[in-house]
Length: 172
Ligand code: SF4
Image (tube, rainbow, N blue to C red):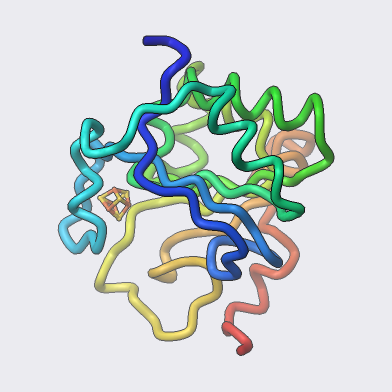
């Protein structure tokens, strides 16, 4: 089912999954299985509702906000999500943030994951690790995770952190 995404939820107007107001696409399925995961109910990909790429696209672009792919593990559905990301980038000026338990280096060395990454703007990478948990981290759960400016990183061929990554405290 090449054109089908397993979707756990679509949340509009959230401010916790990236910069500004965003529409978050929660993908079901995770094969990373961090020990202290708070979303274990999403590990089974079949726990999500099936939606075609066009159905998801039509639903998420009607809001004025930018887009976030989160899970679960979005990379489990990388090839289908690439179709969605490509369509978003071709037809809108929305930014795409993506959260993954895989780190940047793993992603750029996996053709399937890399194809998706190329359409995204910011990556929050790495596994959630309770040992590195800190209160009030902005957009991430533990300090081992990085917020990466994808296009700058690809251009410079090295990891470039997103500009506000240095300002780690969540300001409410
Ligand atoms: S990558 Fe995310 S969803 Fe998957 S096990 Fe780790 S914390 Fe949970």
